[in-house]
Length: 252
Image (cartoon, rainbow, N blue to C red; front, side, top):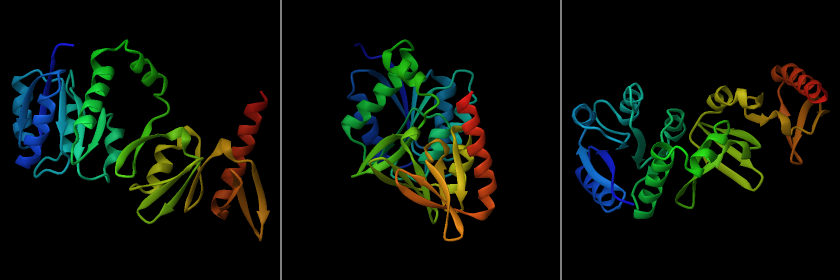
C-alpha cells in the first residue's frame, strides 16, 4: 500500500512530539507528518493544509486537546482525531466526542500502527469489513479500560452492573471488573437509553439482567449473576415500574 495519509501531530512537549512524529513517519501508510506545539499553531496548519488525521495531546496550555477536538468536529470536513496522552481520566469524555482512538504514552510502534489501522478502516475505506462491523456496533460503544498497562476497549454490552467508588466507577463484567475514572451519575445519564437503571446511589445495573427483585431484611434487593445488590427506597418504585413495562414488552 502506497503512503497517502497526511497527519498533524500536536504536543506541547518537544521530546514527546518528536517521538510521535518519528513513529508516524516510519509507517508506510503515512505520506507526510506535520507538527504543532499548541492548538493555535495546529489551527494554522489545518487552515493551510488538507489533513486526514490529527494526533493530539490532551493536556496543553491555552486551548487543550479536548477543546481543540470540539473545534475540529465543527469543520465541514473534520479530520479524524486520535488522542495521545499519559492520562486515562478523560477517556470516557474523549470517546463521547467520537475520536477514532485513545493512545496512552509512552507510545509504542505497534500501538501507533493499530491506531492507523483504525483510522484507515473508519475514514478512508468505508466499505472495509471492519467498518461494517463498527457500524453494526454503533449502539454498543466501547469504554477504554486499563489492563496490565494496556488500554483495552471494553464493549458496553459486556458490563453487567456498575459500582460507585468515590470519583471512580467499577465496571463489573462476567469475567472480572475494571475501574474507570468517571462518576456513576455520569454513566447513569449516558447509559439510560441503553437499558441501564440506577437502583441505589452506589449501583447501576442492566435492567434486562435482573433475575429477581425481592424483600430482604426490610429492604429490596435485586439478583444479577447470582449477586444480590441493594435497592434504595427512592429507586424502588421506578425499578418496579421499569420491570413491569419490560415484562409486558417481552410478552407482546
